[in-house]
Length: 282
Image (cartoon, rainbow, N blue to C red; front, top):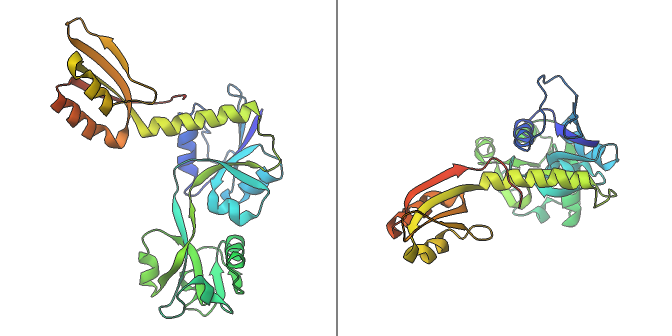
């Protein structure tokens, strides 16, 4: 049975649960459940703190897990990223008072406050910077005001919170993070149960990015229409009862669907329909 670690709370928890549901896995009915056995799919889910997941997976106690790239790298665990999941995106950056520093290389001799001490320590070392790192749980914006540090390193979305605290972003991002699937670095590459899980998750990712588009078009305009809707391999084309007309079915990117429908209509296509894709395999 495949043993999978899943975030039990925080920004990763709900999107991960939704994605697993779309992939056909059983969901827990009570948030207090710590272990859920999905006998039909031969999977056992363990609901853990997101920060601990990479450690459990890296130790070999669990086969794979869903966590954030930032948490994976911060943990220092013997685990690696094997699939990006496309949610819980964030940017990790340094910030300080205006005039304190212009780049990370100016942090020498300073103190950096962060909730991701492992990640920051490694980043400073990679840049040859000798600075102290103070670990704080929770918000770190007040660390500079209270004299705990000269610099902070934290997740930045719009930057509004930092500006309100009188801080400015310094240097390039430390890391672009998102939810990822991780496995132990020493785990075998050819585990069929892991491959099946990854195929299901990849199927959900594709289904979220594409819709199925159907339309009717006169045969003489078919090549131009197919150029607009080439599909993943090639579209399905079927003759209609009315001579000279064909029906076309093709996958198109969701974000481009409305524009493609407009272009098809101008080309003479009619009965243009789009339907959602719940799951797929490529």
